[in-house]
Image (cartoon, rainbow, N blue to C red):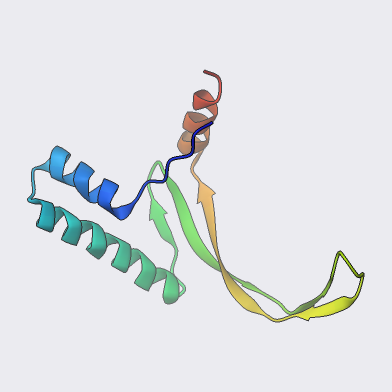
Length: 100
């Protein structure tokens, strides 16, 4: 299976082709959307994109972990993590793609 990465340039190129904005306007639009999403997540808001999924921030508490190699207990600091829950439509679409 060949892995391809969808980049910001790919997104702005798609906007350029589909919407008809100039390449610079398309790149600015993609940057603006990503900045708005990032800012909302930093503020602790959820970002919900209909038929795609929901991005949210979760606070994880401090806990004791274990080094799998040595078995030594190691403290893990509290942290914020980004989570993504795909919509049912996205799950179905991805699952349908695996059947071919």
